Length: 387
Ligand code: LLP
Image: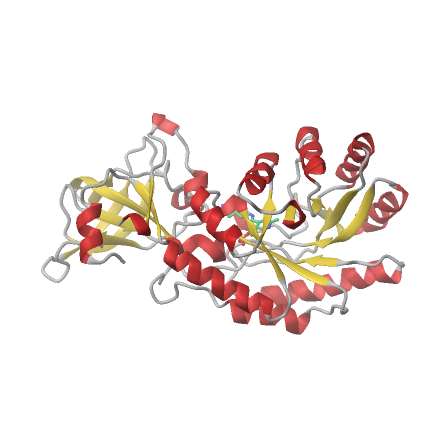
């Protein structure tokens, strides 16, 4: 992952830190944009995946919109140069303060998650003297076949309006003078690698779009959410997701009229592979059954393995790999929790105190989910241009 001269520089940096490869990010964004432009699709970047300033600046510079889930994310997107006309605001629990703020900015649309929220947006828009653009998030009951913590489109999930309530939602929208229905919104889950899931989603989107049109409501925007997965097992073999194949599914299976826009909210697929967490081995120890590598990074820097049992490739940075014998290590962090473990029985060259370790595919839901638990240091980060 790093060349010799980069390895030399990294040795002198304070660890742990997130390393961001902006060159890879640029290539990834260019490929995503080219693939989407082919079909006139609009892509919003989901800020929740990572709101690091340099990454946002780069993404904004390529003409992507922004998908936000809090008032602070909306503000961050604006401050980073995303035009308000390209900002969507989702989330099941938008506060009055957040709604008012987004109304003042005149964002593209609110993705509304309940009938009561629709009524509140209408009231607040009336108070502000504006008409809010809203999209109705429909829970389509599609199984994303991904980790149950990141599945969002099933009947049992808290997201969106259940289809049994659509009649009521449509009536509320009709009688609300200060909301205007812009579109329909769907999002079924994250880290989806099976394109059939998106095909099933298209079938549902068509069904519900027709349902509205049959009732005389025109739908301008079909927002199909995000969720495209990345290859955590082999980041070097697949550094860039297959955006062509992904968008082609929607082009093929989504029914849309010439005036209808299709919008996406991609997070992980755009930025996961450009980030790695770089850490140092503090201690090695061998128990009766196990060899442990104790790193200076833990679940406080990258929570995904502890929270979702997520797999991330772990590799040694530098050193003479060819010479060293391989051992199977449990790679753990310094936090006082047994779940603070990045991987079990990970084959690595025999390691010593001071060796550098990279945990790959950490650009999405890494830095943003870090915490100060155990009063850890603030997160540090380094960009490719600095090495
Ligand atoms: N749109 C909505 C409404 C979402 O809820 C999400 C992610 C996205 C878009 C972006 O999804 P993506 O393209 O990144 O899959 N922390 C978890 C992932 C949580 C995803 C939450 N929603 C993880 O580390 O895997």
